Length: 340
Ligand SMILES: N[C@@H]1[C@@H](O)[C@H](O)[C@@H](COP(=O)(O)O)O[C@@H]1O
Image 1 (cartoon, rainbow, N blue to C red):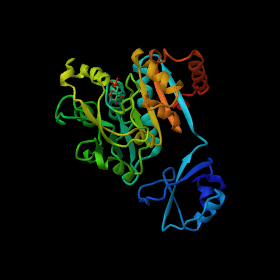
Image 2: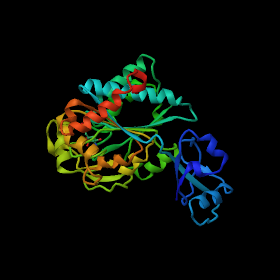
Image 3: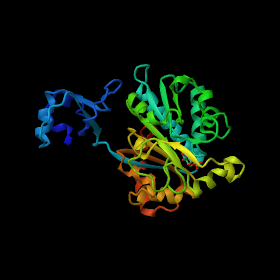
């Protein structure tokens, strides 16, 4: 059921009156409200529901409890941030994450839930986050993380496991309590999406992208409504990742556990970082291509809050018109804070 939130004549309208909201009924299943804030799924009481149904011209079926999910559509937008090189792009993304965490004012009861990738794309972002933590600009004490993927077939202690990567580049240098770190594994992957939901969903999902347009390990052909599961890797991905295994294709695991495309889209914000000529076609597909499961990154076009941060080289396949348009939009916001 889709409703304009503003159409609902309810006290809650005042609480969310800053923007009109698209309200989607998600009943069944009935879900726990614990930890949700006003930007997350919203619970309507039984007394609200008949009005909601009337406005939506839908028949009212009294349930025991109904939850409505509110998405702020008035602020829906896609951003393309272009910086000269990888260093500057990574700095922008790290600044943005720090800004988002601090603006959220996370606490023990209301942590900031952050989705994280591995790969060469986010390495410098993590280096900057560590620097900002050491300078006292950000704390990860009330941040809960969910990594997007992990290889199957190598132990977590393997130097190329995503587990090792995350500790080496971020976790061991910051104040995040180990209990707040989540990395998919054979043991937890079937409950992974439920666990994310228990924390109220992911506030910001940072992503990289493969040169064939895959996000996490959602290889071409993956369902755009997929959730966390085991995937067989494509030859291209195995070859691309052989560089982390001394160029030995045989040493690269052939499958991985990955969050689904839907797991990523369900985050309240997605920030994608890409650099270099090798990502230019994926960036083009993400921005100018049609939504297709053959380029899973294109699913992000449907996201109400999607930011792509790329370097100049990664824009090489985009139309001049597209680059100009986004540069103009971002150029309007000259103040450093507004740029965030
Ligand atoms: N599963 C990872 C992705 O999460 C990552 O985005 C992609 C690109 O990696 P890189 O940033 O090293 O180019 O590679 C792997 O397949």
